[in-house]
Amino acid sequence: MLPLGTQAPAFMLPDPDGTLHSLQDDAPAALVMFICNHCPFVIHVREELARIGSEKPEYF
Image 1 (tube, rainbow, N blue to C red):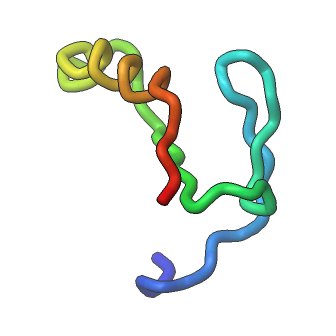
Image 2: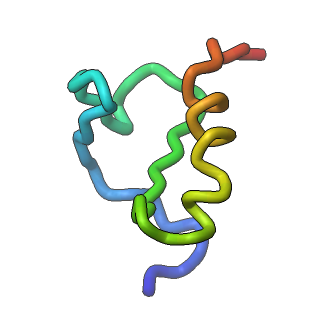
């Protein structure tokens, strides 16, 4: 375990469309979720996760 507040290591991950994203992208925040598509909890919330993921972000 890393202590809270530790800076995330550099990474590049694809989104569902195949576009790569990294911490160096110009975004105010990054959320990475490791979820399992057969988990009962994930099945319960998957439609809401998809809705949130498709919203256009509003940056302040």
